[in-house]
Length: 291
Image (tube, rainbow, N blue to C red):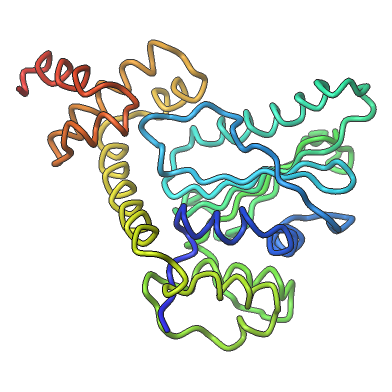
């Protein structure tokens, strides 16, 4: 029996975006919650605007529990430091949007942002788990409640102690040990019912041919986005896109089209990636002397 990688848009949403009991187990294991989640319901995940350059790199799920606490879960396949701005934006917007329901400030419930990062980004730290709060600089016990952020560097994770936070370790092993088309999975991962169910949902045989085509195309998109991001954009330009600045977005789209075409992207593909017409793609290429 072969399994698909859980860090794919298709499989991530299939497991954690459609099964609240599995997501509840995952969040209780990964987040520093004083009171565990009992029940969850999904919310629309469209908070920050979609970045044309990074359409495939960010997979997100948003939900709310019985206490009104909100959880924004993002799988970041690629990384730039400006993604921290996106995470802050998403969590802050989720927090502020509670006022749309007509509640008072004192009734606002916390928002937890969980970012699963598939690349190393804190190169001067050995820790893979990073928990942020808004704290008093002189006394870290004094906390402004409302927003908490957790970043997990998946490539750094090493299961050194299975007894400590065992459920967290097993969920992270689920994310890090199951590879594309793998056919052997550690028996320990099957010991927890929720993780066993999550693994069953990764069975390749459970997906149609069209779904598997979407699965494979996702990796192609990530590969192209990685090459574009690596050679074309500074953190400042990405930050501008996240903030929605028209000038930064326009420059970013043009750079993406030019470099994407040079690395083998077709006009049709670049049109979809940049969310512009094929005619606009052609005009950019002509403007830059490529066509």
